[in-house]
Length: 269
Image (cartoon, rainbow, N blue to C red; front, top):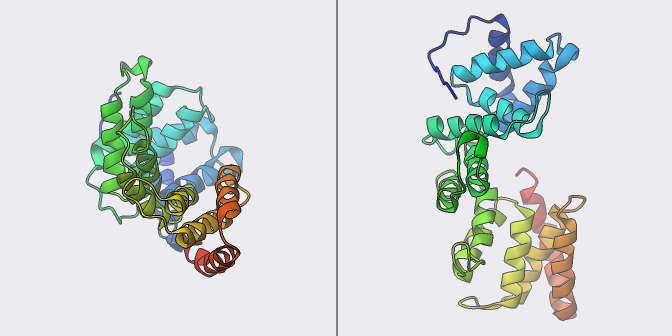
């Protein structure tokens, strides 16, 4: 993919897109990913007074100028076939451009979430390969992308994925302590599946991990609250039900009460 960061934004629509990006970002302390979604909603089709072709052209001009929001929006559009033909190679190119050009973005900066999630997506593409982009499967590069997103940016999804990989012999090798460490970091950011996995590990104990059934049940209950109504609820509830069947009535009651008092602090994540 040809990238020209110095391209002047001569398109009026590109200027409009960038103006909307600038106006959306400061609002309500939302993430850059939220801002990108708002941008799409505000400029999509006739409802925003901008045609689909003009919208894509504006995004492409902004992307050539290196704007992460535009790159992210185009990447997700080509990845999912939203308003354009699905094209994994182009999607990979946009996400890779974000990762290559913004790897050192301040981890608490407004665009850090988009950069971190781009590393996660690039990692997914490397794991599967992108034949049309000349990318062969490369699991080591996939792990490297996840590590950067998890370690430098503290991305909860990347941390959760690393936790899973440390439970697989054919991935990063079985290391319950490393797995629990990554699950714990993601759980404290409100990642409900990480909360459930951490709770399950603490409840049952294991190699190098002493069982703490009350703490384990608490995390499982928090995950139950946080995952309610999501596609992940079934997995969480299965782990919770198994632990509840083995726990004492006292631990069940205390864990539920602790979860109810602690869960609201994750509402902002």
